[in-house]
Length: 128
Image (cartoon, rainbow, N blue to C red):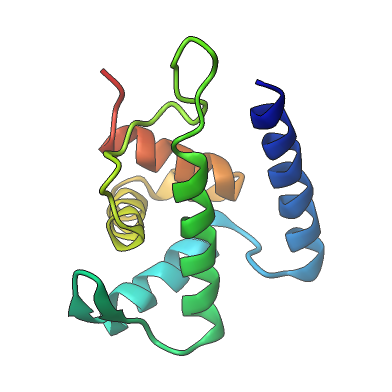
């Protein structure tokens, strides 16, 4: 439990720092970056290539962090993010789920980026 709390604090600090660095300013901006990444991705499975752009790398890195967070759970087994993607879910699948959610829920892109991603993953990968 202490580990999960420390990781959550680190995520909050990283999010605050990234806002100062203007890496990803909004959920809408992240959605745009991820849409471009999705369109420019080539290959399949373990052999994919993403565009070599700042925007694609920001999307990939952000969603990879979300993938890491998605497995964290409280002592009772409840997932902290409130979503339950299967272990074999890839970063690209998470990106696609966020982009799909962003297209169908544009009003959700006005708030906090992490909250928008959490909601997208909860929608796509609900816990049972």
